[in-house]
Image (cartoon, rainbow, N blue to C red; front, side):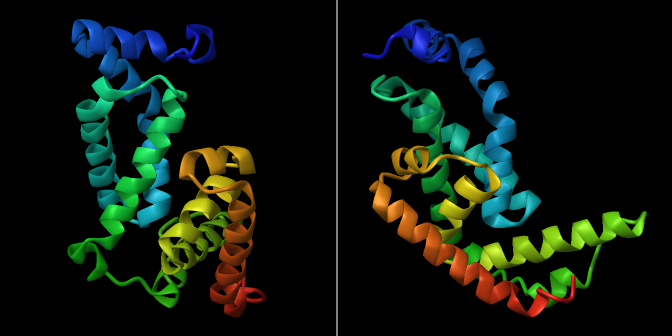
Length: 188
């Protein structure tokens, strides 16, 4: 069992498990909802899908928290659930029917204002569209490393991959992303 000093969420989890204290669970949700939504949005590229996926993640957490074994930090355990839920959503038949084109996204900037803001928004949209086109395994490591800035060791822990596999998967993911972004390299 982990020491309580290592993970500030341990007290909340213990209270939820031991006393069925729903306020403790609500505190966990409040603490992590922004991170969960952002990860889901990057993974799905759609605000509604990200909200649905976030809700599914917290339902899974609620159901499985009593089985939390205190062998890792709560955030590591949560990220595993997030990755699995996002992968499940992307693999679902309903989700696969959605198609996103880099050309469609790149030509529709929704942020009026100064030219710099418009260019920044367009770059983000092109990146997001390319991110949606790569394999889920690649998308996960790109989000964790290049968007969230996590270490290779954290990514290995979160995904269950070996450290060398994380590095090689990230390299392949970046190459695949570069292929999708190549046509925009000089246009933005």
